[in-house]
Amino acid sequence: MTQSTALPRRIYIDQSRFAPWVPARLQQNWLVALLLKWDGRWRMRRNLSQLSDHMLRDIGLNAADVRSEITKPFWRG
Image (cartoon, rainbow, N blue to C red; front, side, top):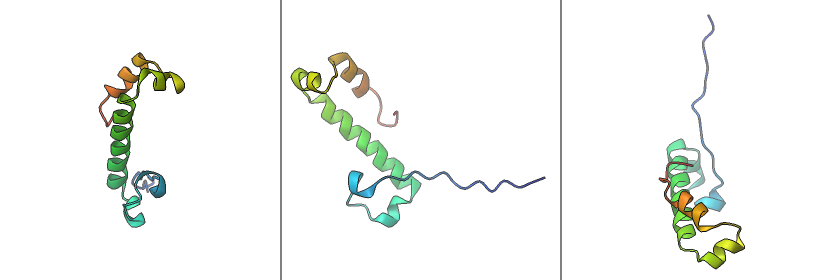
């Protein structure tokens, strides 16, 4: 019987793009990375909800698409 040497799953994100205030050594922590991912989703959805219909058309979205996206909880991708 062989033993499994599975490593813990890690989520890495680009520090300079998402959270420049978080030290690089913490970026390797999967929990910190997960919290930063959730924070990014929450911010993106909040910003998306504030766009006008004209701006939504410019980026190729409609009100139904936005409503569908902003009603998702932050933990759902």
